[in-house]
Length: 299
Image (tube, rainbow, N blue to C red):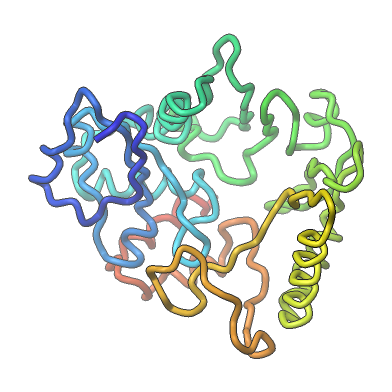
C-alpha cells in the first residue's frame, strides 16, 4: 500500500487483512463511524489499522447516512471507543480531524495543512470553552454553538460578527446557526469582490427542489452554451448526480428519464437538532448505540 493511499471506511477489511498493509508504506483510512453503524451495525477495527502504522482520519461521510460535520463525528468516535474498548484518548481523536488528515494531504500537496507551521495553509477554528475538562475534551465536546471563527487559508470565512470583524473579513452575508447570528463569506464567482447572499443561495436550492425538471433544463442549456463558446470557461462548481439510477457501479449516473417525477426532500438544517436525533432513535442498524450522540447536545 502506498503512502498516498487514502482508503475510505474499510469495514470489509478482516482483522488478519491489516497485516498486508506494510507499515513502512502505510497510507490512511478515513473513518466514518456514524455511517458505518447506521448502515451496517459495525465499524472499522481502528486499533488494528493503527498497529500497522496506518494514519486514521475522521470524516462525516455523506448527508443521507452521516453526521453533518466532523464535530459530531468525533463524538460518535468517542462513543465507539468506549463501547469497543479502543484505547484512544481525546487527543488522539482530535488529531484524526486536524493533524492526521493534514499530514496525509501534505504528501500529495507538498504543503502542510492541519498544523500551524511556517508556509502551511492557515486553517484555524476558534471555539468557545465548554466544560471544565482539558483542551482536548473541550474540543471533542464542542457543538455548532461553540464555533466562534473559522479561518481558511488565512482568510476569515465564518464566525461571530465581532470575531469576523476583528479578523478583517471583507463583504459578508448573514446566517443563523444554533440560534446565533453569524457572518459568512462565500465569494461570488461571477462578481469579483462580492459575496453570495445566504438567502439567495437557499432560494436557488428551493427552486431546484420545487421544479427539478426546469433546473435540469437550465443546467443543460448552460452546458451547451459553454460547449459552443469559442473559449469555453468551466464553471467553478459542477453538480453531478450520485447514483439516482441505483447503479452502484456508476461513477456518475445519467440524468433521470423523467425529472418531473424526481422528489427532492426539504433542505435539512445545518445543526444536529431534535429532528436529527429523533430520526436516529429506533432506526438503522446501530442497535441504539448512536442514541448516545444526543447526550453531547443536551446542555
